[in-house]
Length: 363
Image (cartoon, rainbow, N blue to C red; front, side):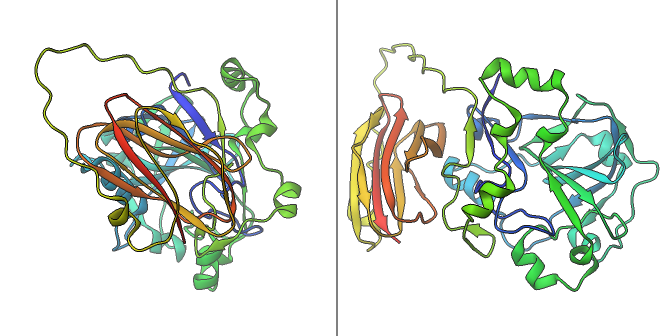
């Protein structure tokens, strides 16, 4: 827990629509984001939260490039390790056999892959994927691989119990006639089942209660989110609970060797790509902007000539991270999703040697 910076809230707008048979357009899972996320993306250890058996491993057979992979490549300019296998790991808890603990974007250890053959999302959707026999037994706290800290708890109410990729309103509307969508499932927060002993680790880091990690059904019903397909109209803003603040940067040792000249940042005009510019900021190192009052949908475009750099925005609910780039020395750009009209403040945290530009443009 010591390296976890923030955790997304259940029913929030973090990531994308991930919902059950009874709700839609909300994220009914939790993202655990560590410090130095992009540096740890393929080395972060993932542990089983329960005693149970791994019976399914799901693989994504989509032909298009996954959004997490595109984000990683655009932000870092790097490729994933050759031996990284992106899967979903399904654990049946010993004490709750009608639940699946789904761990997303995990590259399992070889011992698990030797025991559990991967199945496709289509086989799961048709309800024809078969469980491993006898499966791979795990204990709570046992390392099962590396990857993202992303977890959902899925309770099967009807159907044959095969895990289903029918996890969004968009999928339900497109594939609602198939067994994976017809089976009724209800999703839960891991904090509903977490033992007091485990939750005490969270309390040691921050003054929190279990309910702080959950947007209640009543709250969500009174303030529904808006989706276009599986994308939230406003993504991530207000969707995370900050457990720990980012630690201060340690100054790098001074070197007498001459620095190589850095590549110049793109011009404001080329970054805007003919979008109307609402406002812009530029600087070196850390900065906090003045407040912008924006009356239309907008997006942010960020360019930097190195890293680390982190950009947070505040639309009234506190600062939330929208961009995090690890150490590097090349020019990289990033474009956010569209946000609805709001007051906006921007905070940039970067080492003094990093130059950056930030544009707010109409969408």
